[in-house]
Amino acid sequence: MFNYQQPSVNQILRLQEIEGELEITLKREDQIHPDISGNKWRKLKYNIQHVKQNGHQSVLTFGGAFSNHLAAVAAAGHQYGFQTHGIVRGEELETQTLNPTLQYCTHKGMALHFVSRTLYRNKKQALASVIIDDKNPYIIPEGGTNALAVNGCAEILTSTDEEFDVLAIAVGTGGTMAGLIQSTSDHQQVVGFQVVKDVEIPSRIRTFVSNDRWSLVPTYDEVGYAKTPKALIDFAHSVATQTGVILDPLYTAPMLWHLIKKRKENTWSFGNRLLMIHTGGHQSIKGINQRLAQQGSLLRWPC
Ligand SMILES: *Cc1c(COP(=O)(O)O)cnc(C)c1O
Image (cartoon, rainbow, N blue to C red):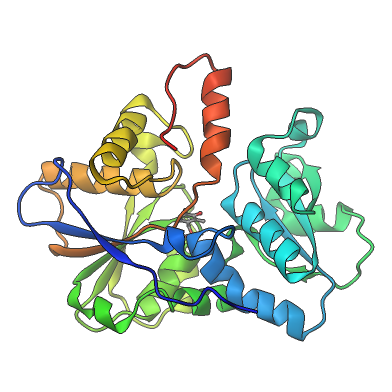
């Protein structure tokens, strides 16, 4: 049933933008599954097992319009045979043409339920207002972060990754980072590049981990969340041209962009042997490019 357990490949990144001793190796988690992207596969693995073992007929979860998590859950339901329901933030979306992410979700059989932002914030209420036939759905929180997800993400690192001092990860809800932190050795620390403003991230991470070898660096102050400013798009093109690696617009591009910026400013105080996790997220690119076109921009994210 679970065919994609092989470790991902580590690829050394050679970029003009990186000066000095820093060496960045990229862990290609984006390549571990054809449909369920990177860390979302890790996060879902034990949740899917739980769904099958406990005989749930359906899975209900939450996400925004570009959500990699919604897309991953939809794909998992299609592949492993359970009905999926997505509670989507933004009632206005219901009357618009679905963006590529949401189209993909419906294509994979997910039933979408659009709710207002206020209702969305109180997810229990949102859930209650959704009429689904299944009275016993398995509920996965937004972004997919729960204890089973953290266990799955603790499988990202392998014994050969011992050679690295620092692990860099993009942080949305913090679940992936928590799994990484749990699986580090004493000489390693994890730096999380926080792409959204969410004051609960540190306490959420602390509920899952038992060591303090980690820190958070915000990226949202400068590039926003899902804002794709020109500087970031140019940067993604530069990385793609130099290395062949496509970063995603919401998570991995802001992470690497910010890291290089800190190096240039001499404010990178972490180690030099760095393993950066490419968590995937490519499915959002189509929607981001469609939005750029609608805004009249000639810029496009590389794909
Ligand atoms: C969801 C996601 C993250 C963040 O994962 P969390 O566990 O929510 O912190 C990072 N990168 C990509 C590509 C993602 O899709």
